[in-house]
Image: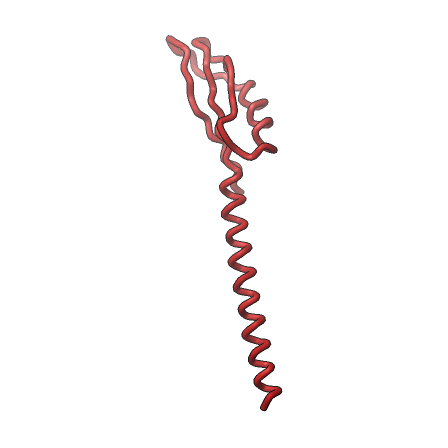
Length: 92
């Protein structure tokens, strides 16, 4: 009888451990998803070229790549200088 009880206890413990690990994995995925958005403020000259840019938030590993990329962008010409916020979303 004690042998059966220990098997049940082991099965319950294993199930609980599995459920906790699943919850932790899901939480990690959600947190990683939040870190993969980079916000850049861009000042655009009237001729459409990027005059300046600055990071407003995001994962440090991704920010510099986004800043480098946005310097190459060309926007439509406009009557005056404009400022826009651009979001880079790196979700899978």
